Length: 391
Image (cartoon, rainbow, N blue to C red; front, side):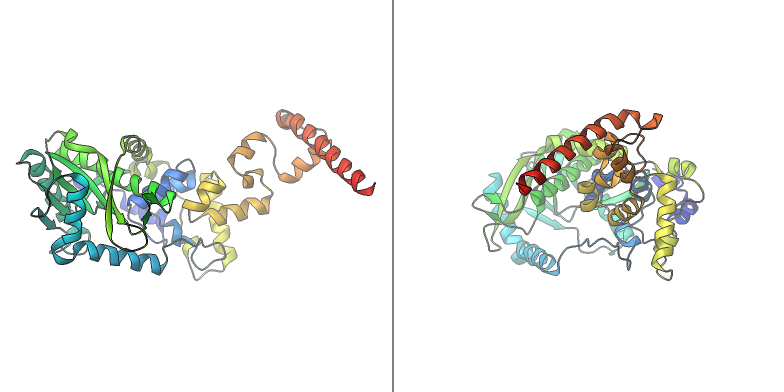
């Protein structure tokens, strides 16, 4: 069968030009989750499609976002993974047996993390093995099997991407159940971090969706993938593992919509102006003012949508966008809701003038009446408070 890359040649020179010196990123479930929060922003969309690592583009400037895990969290995660795999995966076998009601004590556990090159070639080989073994598990004897470090291949924006799961294929009663390991604790049956729980379930749901597509490509009923996933986490404050199973059908549908929203790089190559590049803003030899000017130029050409909560948690451009909007007095600095409530208003200074009764221009009429009303109400409250204090 012809490889995807041969059927649809990637516009490499265009992507290279758009990225410039900006660090490239490889799509994974965390990147997809972050993109989900900012997929309505044009500059974020182009950056994702061009595989630009927005977290590193503005490195070394005052607007570099402080993303990344703490070394303590990384160390705890490594320790927990090692615990699950020691002594022939003894602890993993135990929690799977207890949590799924199937005896995994003698189950075959295939470690796909070993024996393959630690690069993209290795990922492609692991993806082919994963696809073959998943089809065998789904159609073969109903015996428990675990694929440790399964890899799934998917097209994201028209480019191939590889996603590495923890326990992707667990054969239980003819079904395949996605398993994901997380080192944050569950205390008295409740997760200590609800946001982390949601992110983990989204991650597992992504693997579930890609697993169904993998089975479908192999000519196997995708319904063999269970609607539920399992999370293996420490119990209470130690590292002793426990298992939690949860249905993620709704999350799978949302992630499917997200993947379909990623722009195709072929279309992007045709639509993005030739002057758009992340090169200068990523050039650490330039002064910060020059890098910020380059960022502003690209943002002006492509457009941006600033939503404080989503952007600050997900996009490496968040502080840069906020700084540019603040400097311009743009109402969008307060978020899209405020911006949409002020159609035709060019700046926060103009909002203040209209609030004090300045006559509106034709473009400002829709927003001018409620602004003037708010200004009068503000004056009444402030005046009333001042009079009460004076008395």
